[in-house]
Amino acid sequence: MLKPPILSHQMDSFLETHPSEDGWKVYECGEELAFKLSLRYLLDFFRDRHPEALQRRFALKAVETDDLLGTPGKCHDADPGTEWDLQKELNGTGWLGSVELVLDGQPLHYYSFEIQKEGGTENVVLIGTKSNTALREFHHALDEYGQTRARKTREIIVANGENIPIPSVSWDDVILPPGFAEDIRANVNGFFQSRERYKDLGIPYRRGFLFAGPPGCGKTLTLKALASTTAFTFITVLNRGGMGGPHLEAHISHAFYLAEKHSPAIVLFEDLDKLVQSKYISLSHFLNILDGLKVMDGVLVIATSNNPGELDPALLHRPSRFDRLWRFSLPACEERQLLLQRKGARYFSEAALDEVAQKSGGFSMAYVQEIIVNALLACAHSGVTPEDKHLLWSLKTLKAQRKSASKSDEDLAERESLGFQAPESRRPGMLHRLLEEDDVEE
Ligand SMILES: Nc1ncnc2c1ncn2[C@@H]1O[C@H](COP(=O)(O)OP(=O)(O)OP(=O)(O)O)[C@@H](O)[C@H]1O
Ligand SMILES: [Mg+2]
Image 1 (spheres, protein in one colour):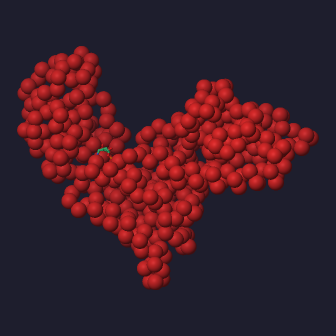
Image 2 (spheres, helix red, strand yellow):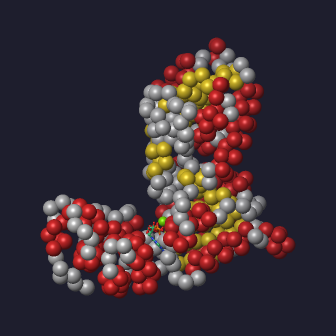
Image 3 (cartoon, protein in one colour):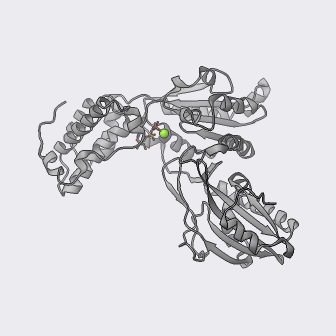
């Protein structure tokens, strides 16, 4: 039953409309339980299986998920206070509002809303029922449906939030030194093909890989390509926008629980160094969790990090924690050249692209890409056709930006990892002047 201290007016009004005198039992589900119960699929389940059971459904508001891979996820499309149109294809990763149904003559009422908590908001679902048997039977069916859906839609399962659709990235999109990506793929596939070998050797069937390196050099892009091109289940824990919060440790354990359930599975920890420095989990906590997972079978952990040196060496050099490290270094001239050719050949001459490749030593791949984007944007804003001089101007501007970033004592790595700030030159009014400059210096 509902515990009294966590109060909100939504809870009060739900209790008022579901009084125990009338036979109602009210249950409260936190995020983790709601995830386990596949509650995010509730509407889709009824649309697909029992559309006749739905009596009322109202949306509160759309849920925006700023997810791990940067694509905003959206729940069922509906305006606040309106009915969901179940005929529409729902791109559902969650929902907020109320759903009332009658199954085999038994009413089941769900109310999903957000409460403010220390460290962010948390989703709460209240369930009202008059029959625990009906509730259990229904949740059994919903769980089955949820598991099929997660596999079918090829989502990255998020242990503490809305699932993320797997982005479409091919290995051709990833430019790395020769043999580098192949080595990663061979190790990932090799792991999942070796169940018997691990068993014969009597060692725990699990491994941990670490992708380390400065921002913008392809760690996440490589993960995206892996997720797009393999059938393994991917599970992650978000540590952004307060989503980790005080329950972070529980979310991590839950991620491993799910991984084992979905094995063969890959558990991703993006920005491991930030995760274990967060207010809610320490490195030793994290290690305890990893070490405690003795029975876990067929689970590969992949973590990314900008500063593996700052992580305790214990994390890196112990079997069954992280036993393999790949360093994603700043790109060599050939890699920069390839990226520039791929992205810029339509607009700029080969000679200019080669010149920029040579002069952009120290740039990350993300920054190299920005040279082109920056040039094209400036041209678009001022209505001119892109020419080589714009590309060289863009290189110059970004170099100046990097210089001023380091001058002002701002950590360049940090600056890049936060995404690109709009360069000065993108401000209207300055564009023409800058585009007229021909004196591109090294
Ligand atoms: N090796 C690469 N090949 C092709 N494009 C790349 C490469 N590295 C980075 N990029 C481009 O830069 C973008 C950002 O790179 P990515 O997210 O993979 O960086 P990251 O290494 O994960 O950085 P961070 O440490 O900040 O998470 C990519 O989406 C891609 O457009
Ligand atoms: Mg990344």
